[in-house]
Length: 84
Length: 485
Image 1 (cartoon, rainbow over the protein chains, first blue to last red):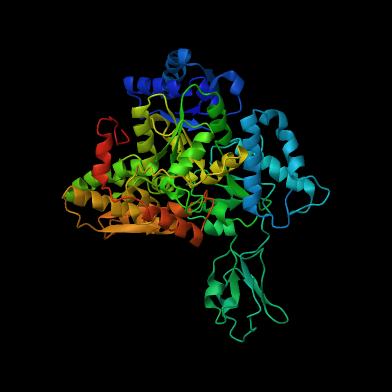
Image 2 (image 1 turned 45 degrees about the horizontal axis):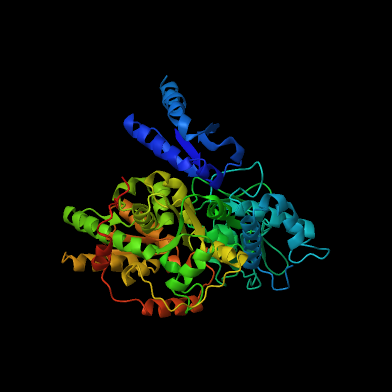
């Protein structure tokens, strides 16, 4: 699973760096480093929607506040779906 | 807007300058649609068939300056992008019979061709492009050397075979293979390949970020703005753009040399061969084309990441912007977002555009700030990383009697990695630099050739003789890791 975080200036100002940090610690905590790759991207062109994050090709809009929720549902949840 | 001497660099530079200027004024979104008309007022075309094509090229270059793919709706992640409106689809067939053909009796070319592509015209042989499979045999057997191999310049320059054509002969870059080296950008005579930019993001942060933004100058910057523009002069100029401060990446390079020297000493004892990890195009070549060798790569972070970590150890809130002649560093930034290294990367031509946009002219300064040792500074020259690591081993009184294959350019890197993969590399270590001559000849520089070398040598000549470890001692209170994980 590839999780791509927009690092354009607008998303940077809305906290993309904190989101990267949170996701990274959660990935470590749940020991799924081998299954999830975190990568950055140029501006995704959706600056209004807050910090833009993609899981594979599906887009999400995140804030540092709802990052943990997103991780539980989409990253951990997504991995579970992949297993089944 | 453009005169008769229009070349690719001036077009690129002009677009970056105009975009930077509007970004600093906060008017980019409002005025970017008018830019193609400002730059190409018409009615006469300057360098292409018509003003409409020229304006489309400008439009696509503006998108690249904004960090987007040149064509809306055709987004991909690659740093190196095709400006398809500028690609001429070079209608050259690869093998062509030249005037040297004597229409000889032997006709070895015809005999060598397994595809029946060669016929004889009235005065010379002819290769039917529809039948030719580009096997190269005819050109090899011709006793007059009369068959020319005219590969498209982009394709010829690519060290990893990442370039193909679509059905209309327009260049397509294979993202899975591309290592961001920028060789095709330098070699396309039509300027149809270029790199995405973080320039608008960096300007936005300079204007709006509550966090301090720091610039980090790669060693290869020295000499690019003239022989009298020292690090102190450049620091003053860059601060005028709104940066909080400037650091030399040569300082991070000193830490890299020390860390790699420890790794090399250990691996030498274990009999394990190791490669450097500072050139991002070389690292990408290993990851994409020699994945078996990832474990042979040094785990030391790059000088860019090291410098950023040092800055963040001093100022935890800092936003770090790398500036150098390298395009692949932009890819490194995206690939290493979890490493707490550089937040953005710019090329030197992008920095030049920002300086011009703010009407800042770097001027000679009486101050003589030096952060990196001369060994760190020389990381930008082929063989420089090896020299620094060996120096660090000597300073620590370790065995420096080891052999290193210094790969100058991507093709040499590829050959040496192939040997290493087969277990046949004679040397103990491998230094990889994707640009010939080292970073100093990177595709994002502003000055190349002899003048750049003369300027750099003059500036390097002014550096003091501090040692690597002595220099690092100045920062011994700072805590940051020098490894990827």
